Image (cartoon, rainbow, N blue to C red; front, side, top):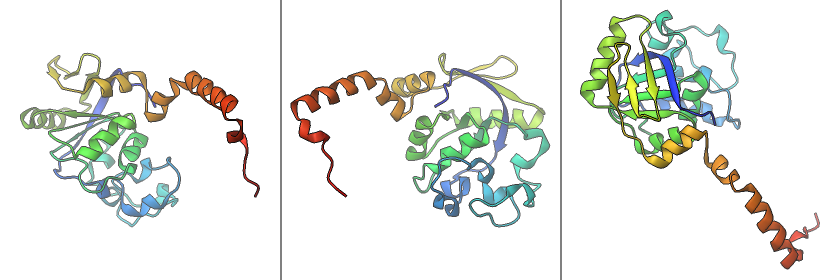
Length: 216
């Protein structure tokens, strides 16, 4: 998992509340057995004018010119600004996969659905909760200035606006540690790889029959 320490990026404003995970990555894409390739289908039903299916060629599909991510000024955005209750609905982990694979490193909203919020941290995406007042202020600024970017300093737990204004945010210490060090659940376990190998070796010496495999 990619480390998140300090990130500066262009902001895309998704001015919708209660964005559910089926909007983030529609249900038909859950049929894929891979963990990659979901970025082109992020917000698929809003982003395209036709119906998308897994493994289809997205390069020739008609785009919805009114959708924010299709507008030229937001191309290359890596910070998503949204309204309350972002990520509600089903618990699919594909939602943060799609956001991360599109290129988003952080999402700022007044509130998130709990399971989606947890899944973001496990997949290298930083969800930041700010007050509705601060989020509305950021929406106004993003819409007013082309190329509006924010700097997010996870270590200091601050969002820095272009004019230098700092906005503090809370993050649970363990989640912060994992993002700063780029550790997902597998990475956390692999920190103890030497101890695990030692344990397994000693266990096989004491119980060698565990190394046997059943025929067939």
